Amino acid sequence: MPGFLEVFGYYDAELKKWDIDYTVQQMISSLMTIGTFLSSLLVGPFSAKFGRRHGLWAATVLNFVATSIQLGTTSKAALYVARLILVFAVGIGIGIVLIIRRGVSGISVGWFLTFAQLYVHEAAPAHLRGISFAVYQVMLSIGSIVGASVDYGTHTMTSRRAYQIPLAIFFAAPTCQAVLLFFFAPESPRWLMTQRKEAEAEKSLRRLRNSNIDELEFQAEFNEIRQSTREQLEQNKKALFLEMWRGTNLRRTLLSIAVVCFHSANGSVDFPRKQVHQQHPC
Image 1: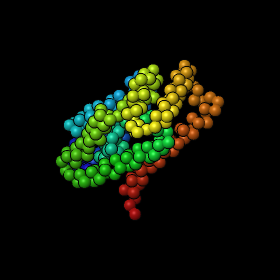
Image 2 (image 1 turned 30 degrees about the horizontal axis):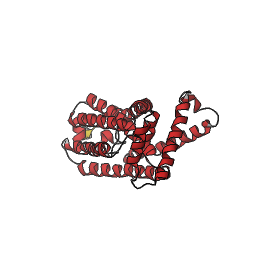
Image 3 (image 1 turned 90 degrees about the vertical axis):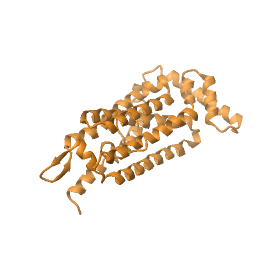
Image 4 (image 1 turned 60 degrees about the vertical axis):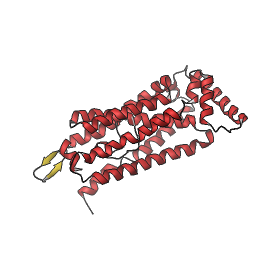
């Protein structure tokens, strides 16, 4: 993408083309991982105190701030800061431009991904959670396709618009999400129940369910939420992190970590494969 390389790269007289320093590439890539790691550590305390809905709001604000910086800056330092911040959120633009190529970036990524999954898990009926998560994954894939398509359409531009247009898409999905959150998405009933706001939890659950739902079915689900929340509050008195590694919990913890690790590792072969293909074309 010449427009990006002319701003953040350098002209290689020997190769007679614009290039970018490997250190800059590594910083752009590694800051995403650092930001995601840091944001993931903050999800638990933040969501416990402020709720899932406010977590998505916070990720949206961080996304707007970081995207605005990346659109306007010509400084590598500002780019790094924006990259780190942006990895705290993720919208539809996974894979768009070099600076966000490996899947949005920064702190906002970790918050969008984590809070979105947490909200879906707690808002969806038990028998529909599998389908809900499948739709969630499909939307990530659609976002990748949209991002890659826009990137391809602008990659030959020689001006800054080459990367500014793809970056601008980062305003689209979070804006839609913010509107939907404001008008249609109540706070998680399970979180409200943990805050001992039972009346608000019932109101939230009714908004999330069909107005024609059978009252017995509704009360059964609400009672299940109430009971499981009581058990959760009781368990919270213990050192939950240590409990994960004890007794029968150990096997479940290791299985969960293994699934996530193998899922993430599957995407790590993409960049090296492209590099090998470029260096040794068939």
